[in-house]
Length: 369
Image 1: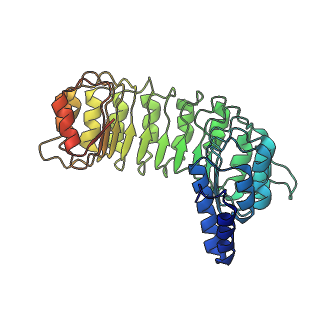
Image 2 (image 1 turned 45 degrees about the vertical axis):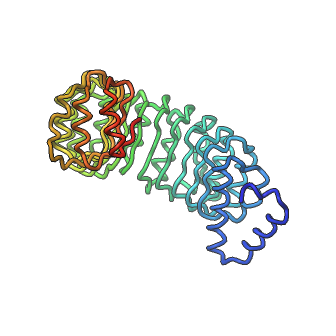
Image 3 (image 1 turned 180 degrees about the horizontal axis):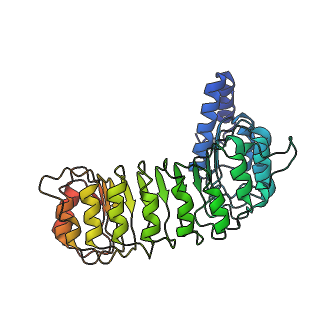
């Protein structure tokens, strides 16, 4: 379809077919067509402008940094009923365009602005006017501001005041967000939270999170200054936690992994890359939890003892293991991991392993990366 779009007759035929469809079917097909143009990297200003008035509920413009900001501003005019709006990588998005979206898209539930680095706190400054308020915030359930590096913390006031339904928040790599702003943000209850690479995240912030973390399913808190003792209080109150990323956390040790095994029985995936953990911590995890994903890349203290608990008839649910650049691991660990019947992927780059062992993995259909 994309390759034939320049053919006027073909284009006219498709448009006529769209007009003959029911409203619901028409909407679904248009959203599908736009997605196809995006995947082929052929979405132009003219094509999007042609379909924009018919896009009702979902619009994903990930990576469309070639579209002019003036066109993005039109989203709030033509697509007032949007439920999901993803503008990841749209580096041209301005404060004015975002504020217009927040003021006019009343039904917005998902807003993702990852990498929109021109955005500051200004669009989130709520107007006192009933007609120019930030209405989109009221219905918002998921907000991603990852890598919006100019945010400092003033946006928090509007988010906390208006986003009473917010359950998923991503402010990773927003390095200028202050501790006071974090304390305010954590007055809400989340099921998904990503505060990785935010320097202000520390044990003081964790104490605020402790009283609001009972519904957390996913927590990403990599590259922060949290400690074992501070994090223990959070883990004790996270019975629903399934996904955890604490990679690049220099002050966390095996104690935290033992706390995970003790307090988070539903944990399915854990990322521990580049931490000072040892065999003791990994053994606690594998012995006490039914993990699907384990990543210990660049953990140079890990040896074959970490996987010694995987027996001959392993009932392990592991699907993916990443041991890249764990230089002390040998063929023995890979042989043990192959006992996991559901294992589909192993990260082995940087490990000194024999060719027969690697071939054995490939013969079983295990993907090596």
